[in-house]
Image (cartoon, rainbow, N blue to C red; front, side, top):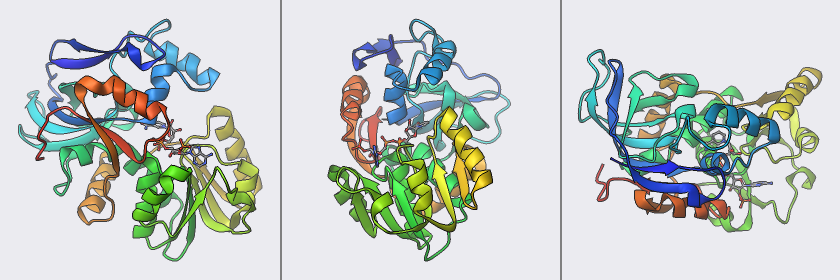
Length: 334
Ligand SMILES: NC(=O)c1ccc[n+]([C@@H]2O[C@H](COP(=O)([O-])OP(=O)(O)OC[C@H]3O[C@@H](n4cnc5c(N)ncnc54)[C@H](OP(=O)(O)O)[C@@H]3O)[C@@H](O)[C@H]2O)c1
């Protein structure tokens, strides 16, 4: 089968189209024919090890110290159909349409991949594809949708609340804006100039261009501040929260996360750092919300599998609005 193999840390030139063996499912695994995948910001950060030093050392230990050799294919999101399965699988049948997230195993820039029928936690998630989405749309949903759902539920979001979303134009952010509107909140969306029109189009009530304005100095206070990217000033954000408000951070970093947990004990405000929520139950909740029309996929560009390196170069520019999709099977009618 065709795969995009990750041959070195650094530029996108290290992503190379190769023929590799099609995997064979184990007894508890399904073989998925991938129709679509995505190039996320995390894929590009991993590729170039563009992460804080401590995390980059941990990543090298996990992936391979000099070059990636334990994990050699990037990509975490996919949608496709069940092509075959091991003898113990009961949850799916060949032909079922699915979408999912492979977590730390990565490996979605391929024509076929194997996953346990019930992966859990950082090993990924798998569920039936929403019936009202194409494979390309469904592939763009798992990561951002699960993160947005997890955090907004943790904050116990309520109708009428004022919610501010930092990094609103990205993968998590575009799902979070739509979900917060679904929960009938008043949404302020923060991102760079080129993303504001997209944010208005998905329902944001207010948009703030972070390259010109600082939300911590606009005199407004919010019930929930959701930083999807870990770039908001922590103390300033707490000052912009109402009494009993909640501060959510999907990317606090190791030390930032510890600091936030500590601060949460000392202030009356709820501080919820770190990522979670990768469960089948949450995937099915996400599927239901999609089928109810609460969230739509925001797709910026599509590239064929052969052009994954090109897609990475585009995500590297920082211009991505929502998601960049890799089309593995053309003429997707899924
Ligand atoms: N995708 C994954 O699988 C995954 C997994 C684990 C962790 N994460 C982490 O989760 C975080 C969010 O991921 P994502 O996929 O949603 O990222 P994304 O799609 O790149 O979205 C991030 C958005 O934040 C904007 N931004 C950057 N600096 C900002 C600032 N100071 N204020 C407001 N907005 C700002 C970016 O716009 P500009 O570039 O135009 O500034 C971009 O639109 C990332 O840090 C990523 O490493 C992702």
